[in-house]
Length: 99
Image (cartoon, rainbow, N blue to C red; front, side):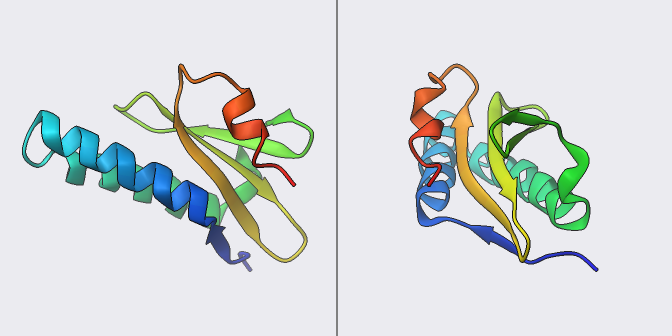
């Protein structure tokens, strides 16, 4: 049985900001970004431990086609998405969300 997937408010804001930016670059690209995020989130919900731990108990999944990373952790009762950030952002940006 899979655990519920919880996307924190800050991670939702990350997704929204990136979608808006991509949509400004080209009509429809924001939707394609959202599709890529949803594909990763679906995989995390089905098999949350598929990615290795990158720091403490935080794992990282990569989006296909877009240079974004999903940082998440697997807890006893849920899988929690902490951040969805561009791969070139400094690690301290997502590490500050672990608490």
